[in-house]
Length: 113
Length: 462
Image (cartoon, rainbow over all chains, first blue to last red; front, top):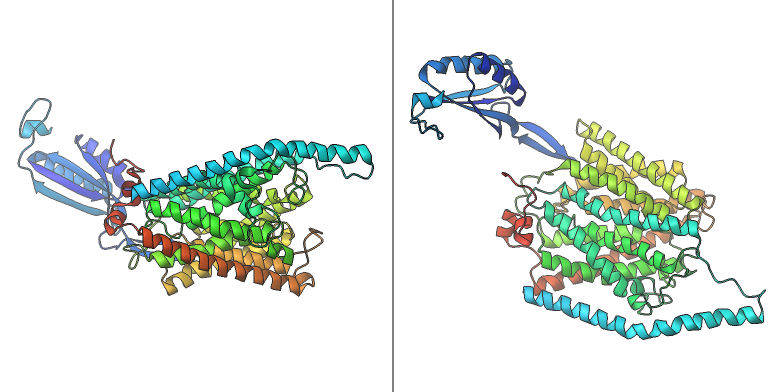
């Protein structure tokens, strides 16, 4: 089992979701987060006071998957989120120790899907 | 500490209520005397006797509305300021504005109106009208011959409320609530009331000298603006504001507040005609024109110096324009209003974007930069652009051949600035000595909403 965490541009969320549904991946958690990578944020000006490097709005997706879904998920996210510009985001893949479905108390692989 | 504050309040109320009860006996006599006075001359010489002033229904209707419009400015100001502070301090700003609406309304009825508008003395109005004794429903012709005296009192009450509320922006996000309440009561009593009397009261010495302040540029904006600068310096910078500006948490609030201020300002300026007449219309037109010119100018300045026109800048400019036209509204033409509005944005932008960072005072929401600078420009501009063609009761300014008016305006500005600075300093130091004015560092970090009022403006989760 893996936990896939993806940081993407907010306006790419719909496209990523569409790609994930196409690949039959229907379970995800989405957060609004702030952050920036190499593009170093934006400049805001308030009454002439310049604020450099403010954090940008990003979307953080969390998807727990069984091994044979890992590549499919990664490809779907790339397909939906890639624009070729700086700031497209990152995908992190982590080992997942356990997964429990609260309703049925099932554990492991069957609990994910 | 809290107990002392409560006891002080209780004392304040008991004493003032005592005054009122003591005065209750007199009004019973006053109407009787009044009717006698009226009946005697009419019986003896009906032709020679001047008719007693009678309230005009049209003027009264308009001034009731104007009074309500000015009242709306204080909550408007609360949103204007509230949007610009951090999310942990927004309720504190709203609360400070609202509690002033409550406190000053009572202060004004009990003794504030008497101090500010009581007749006959150069420095203070005295205590003749305490608890509104003698302030009846007949017109008082020295102030307003066509509306009930109490309506004039209520109209001025709204000015007395918003003036101290303006100062809130300077010490935002770091003043203890108890200290705030005490400072504001003292400031209203010892700064606003006397200055108001000098400029507008019968016998006020600046009024007798011929200083023009149509709707409160000197009394309201310069007075509050300079007190704001001093308070911001005395209370020192907000924690963490040295290396990073504290960003506005809800600019739509600020724009909403600006809209309410602009709307209410029609009552503030056009209402200062104290009648539904041509002068009120002139004030209405120039008020709108100046706000428009100033908002537009600030947007253009932003565009040139900061790459993009900003919403906050345009809103700030509009308020600066409203401030600048306030003392001039009854004396200048619409074309002069464009000049006054365009120039005020330039001056205020310089104050806010260049002078403030250079000197390093933390006037959090630019009360000095917008209200004091804008007010000073407005007062001086009145001395430049005023024209008897607009208002025969006014005077001509420098551009209409009367340089003396400019000097009188300058003197009124300087006197107000000096007096407000000295007395505000004394009040601040006194209160700081008794109870620390600034909140402890821990409270500042947690936010004043939580530490001063035990509330949060926004829930993060249901």
